[in-house]
Amino acid sequence: MKNFQAGILESIPQHGKYLLYDQIPGSAALECLQRLADDVDGVGIVVGLGPSLVLDLGVEIPGLRCFPAQSTVGIDIPSTQAALMCWLRGDDPGELLHRSRQVNDLLSAGFTPADCIDAFKYGAGLDLTGYEDGTENPSGQEAIDAAFVRDAGSGLDGSSFVATQQWLHDFDAFDALTTSEADNSVGRRRSDNFELEDAPESAHVKRTAQESFEPEAFLLRRSMPWSIPELDGGLFFVAFGKSFDAFEAQLARMIGGEDSISDGLFQFTRPITGSYFWCPPRKDGRLDLRALLK
Image 1 (cartoon, rainbow, N blue to C red):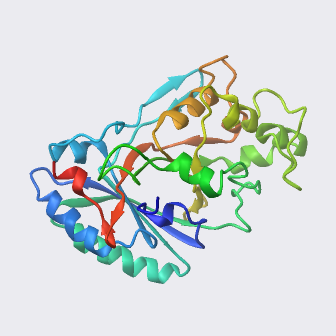
Image 2: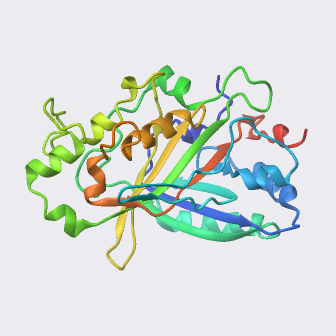
């Protein structure tokens, strides 16, 4: 199966730009999407459609739903659902700027910009805390099996569901942790990425061990650090899957839904956004929008 947006499967780029849009009510959204489909290669730009946009087009994508807001003791998981997302990928932030202007022009008749997150690769693929991100990512055929829809029919096979969250780090709180406390919150040593066998049950690697769920909850993560001049920063979490089920299972365990034990990451970071999108497949060199035309 090779009819997916290939940028989903490729490793994270040096620079990224996440463009989020709201739909203009009563606009010609489909015409805008068709123009975008002709211009998107699925590598330098990955496109995802939100549930409100799909419903407005009068169709249903099985499995697509709004990001669920949740609250538990001391933890809020917000939903800030957008209508459309374009993930721009590249090596030059200047080129991404000009590319984003082109995308905005293509969509201007049907969408208004809601947010823009500039992201980047840190080191060899680290979170801004210095810990390696995405260590347990599947690869090869296992990544394809985890990330893409199959056996659902034309216009759906090769598509993917993506969950996004912008996490804001409290660097002062993180810096106040001892080396041992920080390592135990993640479940790995920052110095060499070695997994700690005696880490507490709150350690992130134990909360999200993909093979420990029933069924197994494998995701393809493509998260990238972000920052702004006011010294705020964190991780723009991006997880692709053949459905949202694996993400929701992991998130439920992170906030203590199974055993009231919350993830150690919440000591120094929290999500401030949350959206779900459906990423169409590709056909004949363009985005395959057949599922939206039924």
